[in-house]
Length: 197
Image (cartoon, rainbow, N blue to C red):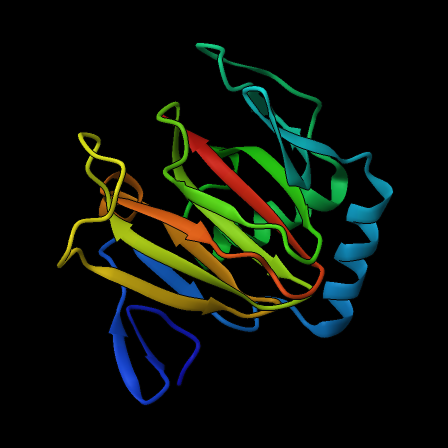
């Protein structure tokens, strides 16, 4: 399997990724990964809030933030220097202008922390994610706002986000597909950056 991108070979089968989903392994080295995790650990992370519920993961937002129950995004602290450097590198990887990535979220997933089915809020556009520390499985399914449950025959994809990998979601992958992450087995970090619409 190469570094990219549209088709992945998993367990002997080729998985066709949704249009607009691009994946690359080995975005950074193991030494860089350790440095990034060390930088994240210096940041004050707070438990993720979803309305009245508190999630198992901890986060910190930069550039812009969104509180569930509110209508709009609001300004957040400026990007830390290490995130700015990473943003520039990620933008080069995907041939986009770095200054379009105006929001960043640092996330710590302790063992057992999941993310339920969702699409990122509509105020944000392209999503770029970097996976650090341990692998996780990202599940993808076509979404239908009229129902919450998965119907028989719905297309469901599952890919492994390896440590030090990077992905981009745009177009159909961002607008039509939902994604989720089952409970992680080991401590994991991610850095997610987004454009505004």
